[in-house]
Amino acid sequence: MDAGSLSSSSNYNSNSRGPLQEQFIQRKSSRENLDRFIPNRSAMDMGYAQSMLTDSRKGKENPAVSSPSREAYQRKLAEALNMNRTRILAFKNKPPAPVDLYPKDFFSSQSQDKPAKPRRHIPQTSERTLDAPDLVDDYYLNLLDWGSANVLAIALANTVYLWDASTGSTSELETFDDETGPVTSVSWAPDGRHIAIGLNNSEVQLWDSTATKQLRTLRGCHSSRVGSLAWNNNILTTGGMDGCIVNNDVRVRSHIVETYRGHEQEVCGLKWSASGQQLASGGNDNLLHIWDRSVASSQSSTQWLHRLEDHTAAVKALAWCPFQSNLLASGGGGGDRCIKFWNTHTGACLNSVDTGSQVCSLLWNKNERELLSSHGFTQNQLTLWKYPSMVKMAELTGHTSRVLYMAQSPDGCTVASAAGDETLRFWNVFGVPEVAKPAPKASEPFAHLNRIR
Image (cartoon, rainbow, N blue to C red; front, side, top):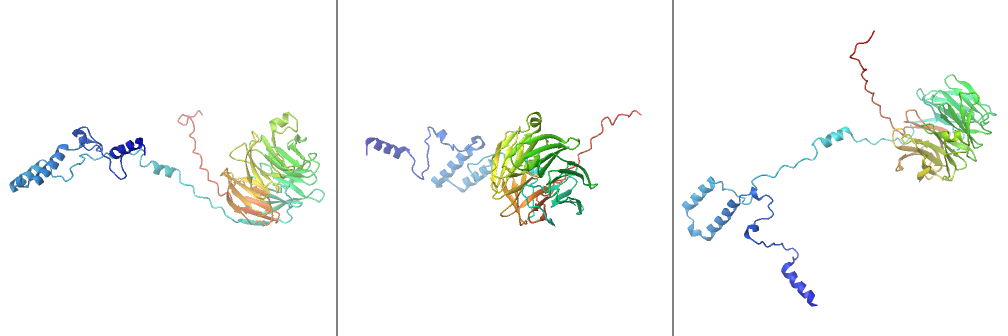
């Protein structure tokens, strides 16, 4: 061992601390040898403490000095001077009470204002099942729609049926002949009274459901069947097997006002945004287009806003988000199986989720941040997703064939699904909406002034 190590060892023995040894600090004066860990020295009676320590030690060291009379005198003196205390080093004043940073009722009032929301129960079985014989098992058609008047329309082969959800009654709207039919699409107008019916012969008919009367026939839009329809106020948009998309103003005689050309195969999905400014279209060519009315009307008919090519199968399922205007969800067919989310302002794909099976239809919950998808092989299920995490909340099974069509009730609670197993099922999947509190009546202005008669 070298000299440097020896010198450090000697210093260690004299100055350093060993394990489990108490550390003593040398004081420069006796005044500093008082207990340094007492935070408030003025609160202590140091004179009394010193007297008690020295007097008790004197009595033990000189027992002969003590006498009964002296002890009696000491007791009397201690009582007079309040020296009968057992604790020598003691605080005279108690520590201050802790100060609350928040009022005591702060958290309790906060919890009362915002009670914890109970987890919603999602029934795993359909609440009602109806027969749907002769429902065409065709992925590219749109044969189910639920209108604002709470009437469900479904096309079964050549016939359109209406089911009133309020009364449970069923009526037949119209049966078309074989040259015209079968029916390839149905869509309610926003008023819930008029309905558009797309046909296999390329025509579109408008009907008044209340009067059970045909109003007009739109011809010249397409050269083959019309498999998709979408309303935008008085504009009825039609998509055909010919790949064309046509905007029809149903109020005027020359109804064709705009034509969009971008798909090379059948248009099987059409959805207008809530603002009515953007149109999403999906086709059997695996393409998804976003059209803007202002752009398309002022420029060429082929001028789409975005041409999105990320899907690897037909794009039929489309749904605009009700709480974010520029968010669109799209679903791909059996070769794709993905749900994708798009920012339609920029055309960016925000997320993509592989569902494991063909995506046939998509619906947003109007009251919560949730998305419902319907699927084909292998489970033929409806899947409820939490957005944006896309965690599965529930899987609803019961259909024995692919769930081709879905429609949502006007209140947003119930979903109807129609499948290739020729059944129509109703699911209470979106719960019950909160009842809006009536707005307080505004006081009439100038009510205190006399009226002029």
